[in-house]
Image (cartoon, rainbow, N blue to C red; front, side):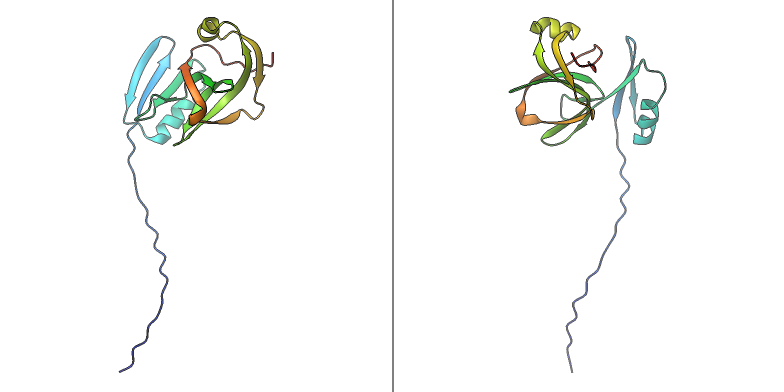
Amino acid sequence: MVMVMVKVKVRVMVRVKVKVRVKVKLINGGNKMEIENMSIKEIKQKMKEKDSKKKITCVVKGTPFKIGASYLIRTVTMIYTGRLNKVYDKWLELTDCAWIPETKRWTQTIEKGEFEEIEPYPNKKVIIGLGAILDMTEVDWELPNKQK
């Protein structure tokens, strides 16, 4: 009797179908409409609609963050404005982002989006570390996109 040991590599591919349950707030002017049980494809279709007055935000479970919402963010050294695009474990990805070197009085800045200086990011996508954030507030004014 002869025993032979053979080493075999096996590559297994598994396809997993995952159902995602997302709660979305569709904001049209002052009216809010809750939409539940939408697929990612349906959400993307809604976000591509031509009506610019419609704004869709998705709440990230277990966080106060809303994907698609506009924020004023104060970090340990700088201030940013931007639309939240993605949330990672330790990072936020913003689009339509600008660095704000100098604000007006803080209340006017928060309420009306008034700034002394504005430096928009040309690539429009910025990653910010969560550890650097002191505070952030959701804003409803138009995000600045022109240098001042």
